[in-house]
Amino acid sequence: MDSGRILSFVTFAREIHVAPPLQTVVLLPPLFNMPKSQLQCYGESVYCIEEDILSKCSNGKNNLERFVNVVAWSISTNRPVIFGVAPFNPVLGETHHASRGTLNVLLEQVSHHPPVSALHATDEKENVELVWCQSAIAKFHGASVEAVIHGKRQLKLLNFGENYEMNAPRLLIRFFPVPGADWVGNVRIKCKNTGLEAELCYKGNSLLRLGGSSRFVKGRIFYSLSMETIYDIEGHWDRIVTMKDVQSGKKTVLFNAKEAISKLETPVLKDPKVLLPTESAFVWGEVNQGMLNKNWEKAKAAKKGIEERERKLARERKSIGDSWVPKYFNLDYTEDGGWECTPKHKRVPPAPIVVSP
Image (tube, rainbow, N blue to C red; front, side, top):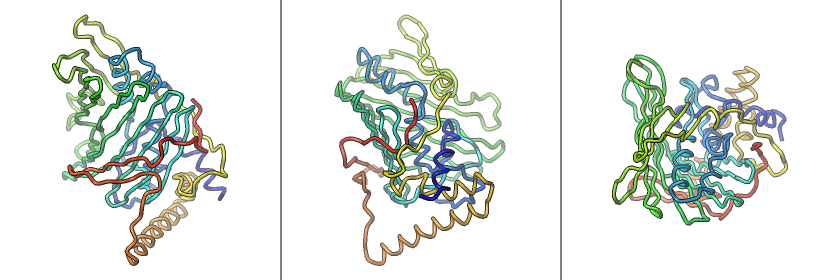
């Protein structure tokens, strides 16, 4: 393996607390990229976390306690966005495979036009499974861009036969009058097995950043059938989120961002021999090396080479009438205009890239 690409493994998590702005087909020069792929950003939102909230989900004493922990976990997957920089758009078939403790995470770019990313994660010790399929579709509104994240996220607690389904907030990027980016919109978390449900509303700054509350989230946990509220939720998802028992009035901390996403360790490449050639940090390694050395011409040339190679492969497939097939997921188009990704394998094996728990 090229030494420059190995170097990228040491540095590809330098901004692991930061979420990607959005995934588009706009070709940016490396100066406006962060040295990582969108797939890595998606994966980091799952495995780069100090507090093991997933274990809390599977070890809850009853279904309400487990549901509360699932809501906290859902909030933890949102990360602050850096305005003005974007991750690399994954190439078709690109993968990212990493492990944290007994949690093994595998992502694959299963479509390029439109961009669709799939995630499968399993933890055999806790008997937890995650399946995501999502596509960010950008809508331009003059002075702003809104990215709607289509697709559902599933968290399965196999010991209890509980399947939690949820969506993701939208990403709103404003250029004028005050540049910035916020997660906004409604998120619904539902478990049909227990009849519990949650609704969260993410709010960003006002247009002029006057009278607004940055990174604010408000919502509730309730019973689906009776609509009876159990807990009210309120706070800032990048700081503290609390929940209040509506009967007793008692307040407790639901999510503490500082405890959850601080003191994170850099992923380490443990076994280069089993690293897939489609691994994100390998695919973009030469570009990353140029960026980290501030050799922008080298980074630009390497990025252009990747893009031209992908266009050439697409033309070749089209000329022979060949369709590209994902390696790790089955991909289906749903009636509501979304995508559904089903893992081809029951479990995700341990990865050559390891994050210390």
